[in-house]
Amino acid sequence: MKRAYLFLTLVLALGVIESCTETKAGEIQQITVEQMSEALKDSSIQLVDVRTGQEFLEGHLKNSHNICVTDDDFAEKAATLDKDKPVYVYCKKGGRSARAAEILKEMGFKKIYDLEGGIVLWEESGQETEKEQS
Image 1 (cartoon, rainbow, N blue to C red):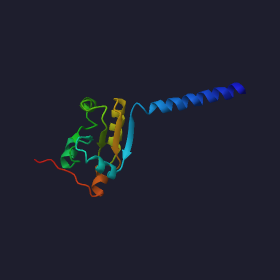
Image 2 (cartoon, rainbow, N blue to C red):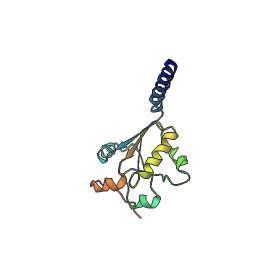
Image 3 (cartoon, rainbow, N blue to C red):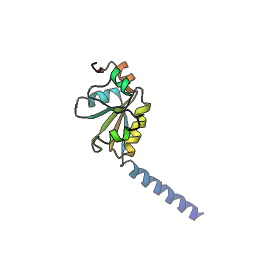
Image 4 (cartoon, rainbow, N blue to C red):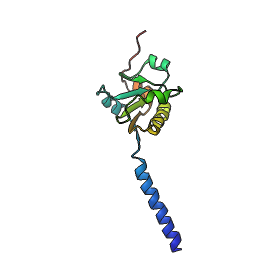
């Protein structure tokens, strides 16, 4: 019985240690419209719209770059970003940006911010978007 107890204690301790070190590799944080709006005051942030090119043309956040997560070259294009600087991602409602955030985390990005509710919630909150000039 003592062996089983010691074994269980050891397994739990190792699990806690591993979970603590795991978060250091990269972190994804969901942020609100208000938090994104505050971040956008710094025009030098890495802001990525992960929707399709057509969706981007219809309206996007100011100073965002379009790197579509469903394109085969997403990782290649994302690799041009600075992994040590925070990167902010968004899509239409949050599904694709969550996928993009996971890919960026796997690529070694240190800090990833994902806009909760995407551009839909952004616009519903009365925030401005830009459209590309034809």
